[in-house]
Image (cartoon, rainbow, N blue to C red; front, side, top):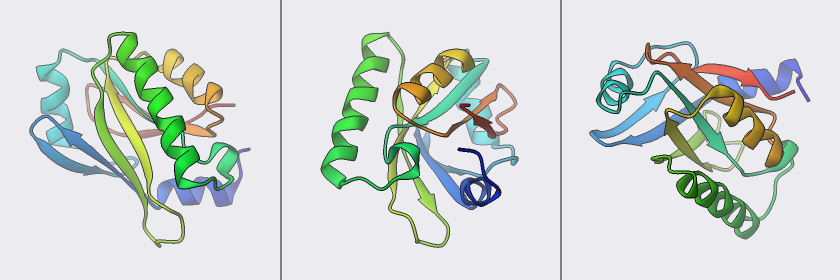
Length: 138
């Protein structure tokens, strides 16, 4: 469901990640030197931020979102990926915070498959340059 309003909402969001060296707030299109260092330390040439909350941008209960996040996290951990916890925060405060996970080394294609599995419209992903990009899952 790609719409100009939805794209604007994704762009008006801070993607906060707990890197091994501490927290960082990522913005679409803006390079993060701290993310670059963390990716280099993990020899990761690509990465993705995934969320399982509010599929199709339809708000769900906190309990449902927590259960969905747990399922996503377990899938990634069982596959052997390191997961850096995070939260997506809408600038306007008009959307609830969403638990997320940043996964160094996760191929973009696999990230998109997971996004579709969990009903997500898009992911945030990038390469070793540490520039977050919005990638639609349609």
